[in-house]
Amino acid sequence: MKDAKALLLEFLAAVPRGQDVAALFAEDGVFELPFLHSVGIPWRHRGRQAISELQDLVAGLYPDFAFKPEDTRVLIDTPEQVFAEYMAHTTAAATGRTAHHLFAARLVAENGQIKLVRESLNVVAAAQALLPGGVKDLPDPENVIFSVPPDYRS
Image 1 (cartoon, helix red, strand yellow):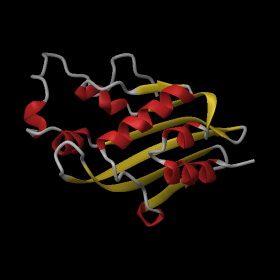
Image 2 (cartoon, one colour):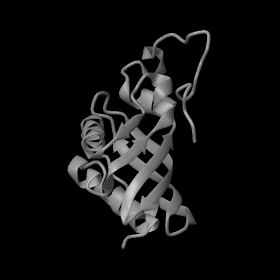
Image 3 (cartoon, helix red, strand yellow):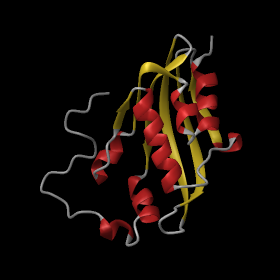
Image 4 (spheres, helix red, strand yellow):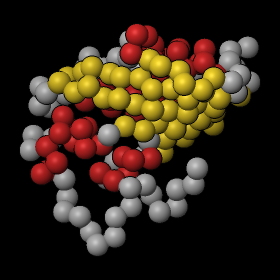
């Protein structure tokens, strides 16, 4: 049975091929990017279909999106959970800008499948890469700002 680290490395090798990534998750597995909430992008994806669709979206935004083993650092490693940092060096399809995205993630494994990936990235850098006017193209801020959804729980 695969442990958390083995699943993480398979996950990173499969990104962004939607079906391949989704197959690593449990039926009710969840992929979260909580900070995407701050730029108005859905942040929680439950089930293989939703995870596959998210990965396909990433492939459309960044056609050369990938993670290399040499850009991955596993920082905490237990059989059920792993925490790592990894970087993608990629080009945004919409702008042609090169982005070097650093991600940090916790992966929870259960019965040889991924139960949860909670990933974080710098959403300002993503906006700079993807939007023609960079962060200037984001909506004006409201009086109350949540970096994650108000009901978010770790």
